[in-house]
Image (tube, rainbow, N blue to C red; front, side, top):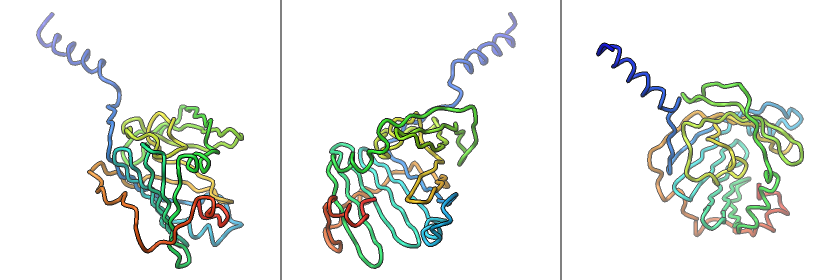
Length: 222
């Protein structure tokens, strides 16, 4: 075998041994999603609030922070996967509220996602430069929605989003039912730079504190 053919063979063999796409496991990550209302015209005020809204997710080790900014309200949920506890900060109609949740409260709030199953399809598309597979999610009550996820980035903290903790990758586009609205979230920005620890600080003043049980009576826990 000539030297040229040997080199080609070695290169081909090495390429076949590599995975089709390199997987990067990250402990720190910032994701920015744009929201678009796809159904729900019966609630125009709420639809206008969510249409064009943004959601930002910060991950750092076992900590996560999910911020939602809409025309009607803003909220931030800080979750510690090590303890299972969470704190929700909400600003609506001039009120600033702080809601504490223990692990049982967190599980109750997300109970609708228990038993969720994901079935891959043959469809793929590129989002933010990453190849994504389309999957159909089915909840235990029979509700379904679609999600596009990539396996090229995998967060070490898989518990940051309860509904996707068993998904085999990172969701970059998905649907979410919010009341009477169905909202599509699509990633517009991915940043793997270190996240400041201050993002996970709990305010000590300026907020009226409610228990999770109290917040449920006022529909402020979601």
